Length: 616
Image 1 (tube, rainbow, N blue to C red):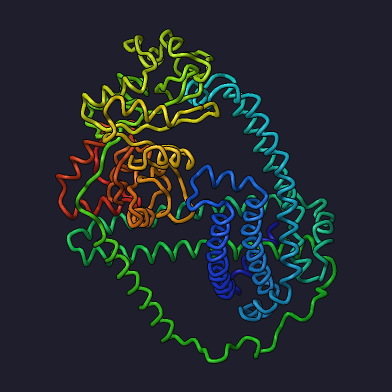
Image 2 (cartoon, rainbow, N blue to C red; image 1 turned 30 degrees about the vertical axis):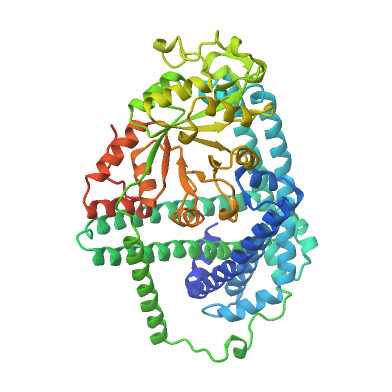
């Protein structure tokens, strides 16, 4: 054990410069190859779907199709292939016995000579890894259906019955077992790549032969693999924390001047990028170093059978390019200038005026039972501009306000909405679960909620819920809204693109919203006025693209003051929240802040500095 550590430290000490340079080369290659590929695959995805816009459910369903699997395998396979080539080049540098290891260009050339067998080996590793994972995923799916498939998932997440914890326990066992199987496979394959590189073993035999040589060595190999993973994780966490702490310290002292603040942001970006790059290069370089020394001392048989690793000096030269110290310094100054300009642009692009609507998600569910008349009234009292509700059809064709497919979460009743009549719902108490004072709450009709919103002078965001039993939901919602005279104060939303198209076909001038987390395709071509996006995925570029396409952007569901302020700074049009009173308070606090204070709020998104926005 000590011998491997000592040899690895010595090899890393003599080769680290060339290892790092090689890693940078392959990071650039990865960026060049995968970025356009992902764009092309998404274009193919949109073309094959026959749609101009694709929402969450469309994308998820696509990746469950053969073409979707092919896209995932293509991208993942290329990334794994590039990583394998990087490991091949780095191991070649370490394997060269000269004082500094093989030069980078020589290692790149050697790796390219071995590229086809290396890629074949990577493909086999990916295939057998997928085969190993598949049974565990299948068992996990069966457990979910058997234990958690009886009622709506929200019942289990909220009430957490015993069967919920049983399912979690079984899932944990499945996960641990799966990782155990994968670690066993990886320890068995530890010698495969150097065998292909230095012994000319064919990829088809390398995995099996590596398994044979790993017999009796698995504990040592497992120790090194797990140790490397833990060390990499700890190093990444520590360095990230230090950079964030240092950035928050210096940026907080730069708010007196926009120019100085721009410089501080630019320097922070440079330092953060450099630290992340260094950690990545260190992790891959140490992996290659330890990997080669493990092979050298535990897995190699005989001498290297490959051609001499020392390549002629001419193979290292790049015609027409000579890197000097002066040119390197000039490149650094250019990079710093670009970072400063970028920081200045980011600061000056911040909007200092908040024009954001507060949407009470299912009313005000922190203070009253969700989707009830009491919750709607509370949202109005809390200062909401809009109230969001969920609607479904009953067995007798009524439109009622309810989220889940059954009443297990709110009333402990197994009845499904689509099997219940409006008369059946009058006997179901949907308020006592929240608090005794709401024992008289019943499932409201859409008409009752519309009347409350009309009296409270707020808009109503109606989300169409589909559980596979809808008949004329869109038409019935349209009829109820028109009967209550709320056409100008209603938005119809759904997770399904087809539902939005149906509403637009019925009432082309009505405002509609597509709920999504991510999207692919041309945003300008979707026939919806609003994009309601998961706050975890929204970005300034997405908001700008949507606004250019004539769409407003809402985010859901934001319940803490820091994220609310961040979303407002990004420029969203509306915020869905379970705490409309808190959102109103955040808007009031921001309105009272000076320009430097508002700039500090925007920096919270970038640097992880909590803005000074208080809870109620």
